[in-house]
Length: 328
View 1 (cartoon, rainbow, N blue to C red):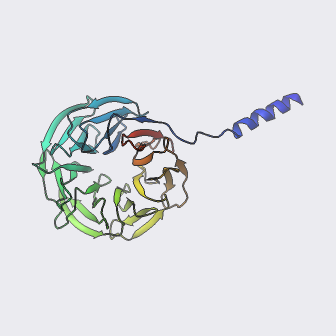
View 2: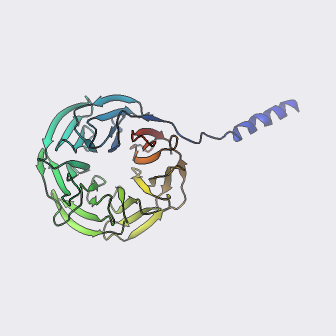
């Protein structure tokens, strides 16, 4: 009887122990946040700090800083080559795109984009890097291309943006360009073929104060995080018809699709459960995470093996990015 009582107590104790309410993260040596990408091949994460920073921070998959790449003027947007051998960095304060060898962690090339272009947001479609550029809020935002070392500007046709548009793709056509931080925030869908953009659907149905966009792996669905909404919205890239909503909460500002397209991670500007993970097509989170302290989500990225979800946040009054590794 004594042994049975002890065994029963031993079985009960773990059941009443709750996991920590907040994850822990590492504060990075940057003053703001620009972008992040995950390099599974070399087991690294790259994070930038935006136009007012001049470096790229390299961490391991646990979020520990390994190296800081300097002389990257206004490093903001990031894109990896298809083989993960090269990291492309949009230098918003350097009027250029830098190419970084992801094995040696050294710059191997720098491609000037022209005076007063401010290349800010990057994405890759097949072997070409596309970038949203524009220095001021005066409707000079446009889309450019870097292909085989050649820079081509003004690729967006009749579409115009107040500032450098955020651009996104799943590595294949289509490419989406969105007007950030405006009411209303328009998005434009482009088919990419033969290195040329062909305009498709466009509109302002995504709401106001667009912050982040992501596409499903097959490019058929666009997900948007806009501050005027209380959910992350889905849209068909063919005609921008609605493809569901994910009730993340007020002020969504980050979204990322898992590499297999089965899950969607969302981040919001709040002090509650900052990050939620949904099954594609679901409405109830299968996971929620509270980031360190009272910080708010700024950016999200999945590891290609889907074992980790990297979240960048900041804790007011500082804008210094905090990198947290989550295990969905």
